[in-house]
Image 1 (cartoon, rainbow, N blue to C red):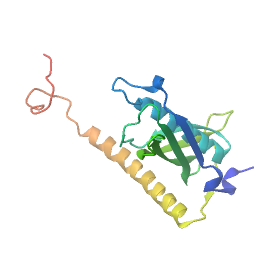
Image 2 (cartoon, rainbow, N blue to C red):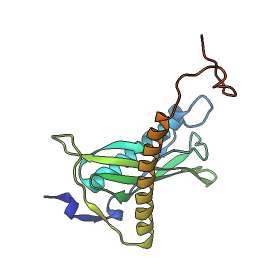
Image 3 (cartoon, rainbow, N blue to C red):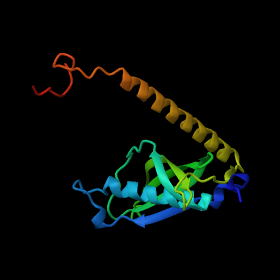
Image 4 (cartoon, rainbow, N blue to C red):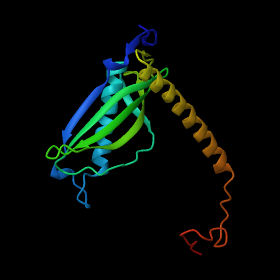
Length: 186
């Protein structure tokens, strides 16, 4: 059976995860540790990708994660995930994270990020073909097209970074690093 001949609706793999932020998640600043939030994001990205692909999936990349608002201990964190874009074996999973102070009712957007997940064949551990997306709304079409754009931009950034690395002059002295917050030990 070739999964790439199948198309699943976006809603069939959307997942919502809610978790109480407990004191053991607290960092030295008294807020929920960013690593806890990232771990939850990775878990929901896996669940969403595996649900869509019906395969074991691995995280290939994570677009930047901006922490827009701190998460407080005692709040409920809700993560929403959706497959935005599908390639041959990879998927972009969009994740939106909000915190809720259930005492006051205040809800704050804390993060949005995009995880690229790759489906793997269980025996060969090589990329596995996945089903495509059945786009049923203008919003789903918009997300798919923006996901395709982000994929293209990531490839361009990798190319630009590789080219820029080739232009670095690694023979440095104090003058070539003037204005930087470093000093070359002699």
